[in-house]
Amino acid sequence: MNLQTKLPTPWRFARCIPHSNIPNELRDFLLDPGSTTRRMQREYAAQTKVDLLKQEWCYPHYQEAKLLNIPLRQNALIREVYLSCQNKIWMYAKTTFPSYLFTGKTTHLLTELDQRPLGKLLFRDPTMRRTEFELVLLKPHHEEYQWAIQRYAAPDSLWARRSIFWLQGKPLLLMEVFFSGFFELVKVKK
Image: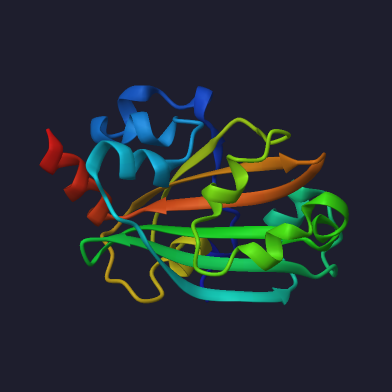
């Protein structure tokens, strides 16, 4: 493993990235605080399929634990999925759920998730708040890039965003990586 793979991924707040650096067809989606899945279904009549890659209790990545303010050795539920439409993968999503999220009024998350898009649960909760987006152009030497391409041949770079959702005052972290299938859907409409 070379030194480059050990460096943290350079996430930056969206407000700190010149909009001209983000591809036109992706900019609006990357900065949209609403449900990407719902928007795809509404604007592109895209029937989204959720392909569950992993859902297990394990230690979160260092950056994830730090963002969620949880100890490194505290288990979290890690859920990784591909979202696809018309047999093309358009997004990889990784969600980190701290264990304390499954207490009180938020316990329904674990039992209702299954093969459903996470947004269907998040955006119907009236207590939900979302933090400002952080963005990055992932390259092959970034860990997040490697997580995203588990079953997919990818280009040399992939745009990603992440943010924290607060439900009933409890945080979870969602990272989304956009694939070429997404660009193909968006270009077809234009």
